[in-house]
Each structure stands twice: as structure tokens, then as C-alpha cells.
Length: 116
Length: 115
View 1 (cartoon, each protein chain N blue to C red):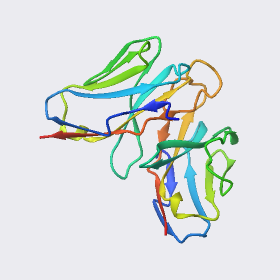
View 2 (spheres, rainbow over the protein chains, first blue to last red):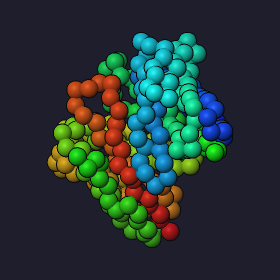
View 3 (cartoon, rainbow over the protein chains, first blue to last red):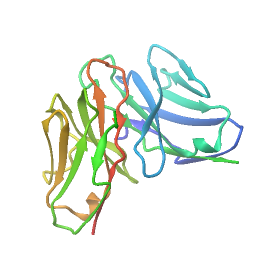
View 4 (cartoon, each protein chain N blue to C red):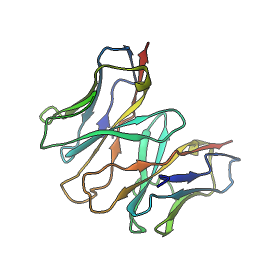
């Protein structure tokens, strides 16, 4: 049972345009969400996060939007650069709710290719 | 800090052999996680530790898998006997204590191939 779903395995975007990566979750107990970026032969690295008390968080070219009612979040990259080409993982956890606070559940990832 | 350090980076072994993967978490981090990445299942949590104690091992696929954390700076994931379907990239990650909403820091992974 995939609790975090990234339905697009890949996305191709032109340099300078916007990249939008999507993620859906099914567990209503999730209240903290993260995006990780992964280059080949490296471990995932943290990119940006958002808690359920917010609907938007911005960090430079990266913005994450959260729609709790739809159980959907998205990562926007504007403008996209060739160096952004990587696999992007969406992850979720029960940050405030107690229990397994530190347990991250990941989606399968979306391969973003930014073409020069 | 050098980050999370995993060894070896690559491991090729024959079916039936014992495999041991190693991890050194970031100093001061109290949480340690073992993840496995496959094409079919993506990144899945196998087990995690808090202060060297296993907290949740529900992701460990079979009894052939075991993990230990004898001290705060070292953990192992062992597969005995290994099977071809265990081929995957295994990641170790750590998180600091007391920060409920924080990210996990990942090592570079061990690519395991069982032939």
C-alpha cells in the first residue's frame, strides 16, 4: 500500500521554464512533508519542507504547495536549470502527532530532466 | 562533519553468501535509519534506531535481514543468506534528537548486487 504516490515517473522541461512535480498521500495522519533531490550515485539530499499548518513554503527558486483537503502537494521550480536534473522524492511523516515522529515514508520519485 | 558514511560503496556477492553493510551516522544524531531503494518499490524504510535501540523494524523483509547498532557511531545491516532479489541500493540516514520536524541526512548508499 503506497501511502505516498508520485504518479509521474519522469518529467522533461526546457531551461528557464517552470517545473511542477506532484505528490499525493493517503494517510491523513501525515502532517510534515519533505522533498528530496537525488543525483545518480549519491544519497538523497533535503530540498524543502512544509508542515500541515501552512499551505506554501518558498525557498529561492523552490516552492512547495500543500492542499490538505486534496491530500496533495507539489514542488515548483522556477526558473528550471539544467543542474536541477535529478530524481525528486516526496516524503511524509507524522511530525507533530507523536508515535513514529522520525519515520519518513517516501514516494517512488520523479526523474526531472531540464533541457538546455 | 563528513556526513553519513557508508561502506562499502559497491558489493557484489554470490547467492547464499553473507553480506554486511556498514554505516557511521553524523556525530550527535540520535536516530539512524536503514532504507532500501529498488525500481519497483522506491525508497522503503527497513528499520530505525533511537539511541542505539531498534524502534521499528516492521520494514525488514525477512528473517534473513538483521540490523544492529552497538554504539552511537556505528550500525550494520546484515543479510544472511543473500538472494538475487536483495539486489538494491541500501541507504543509511541519521537525524538529530529533539527536532521533531527535521530532515534525515543520507549517506551515499551501498549498491548491492547478488548474483
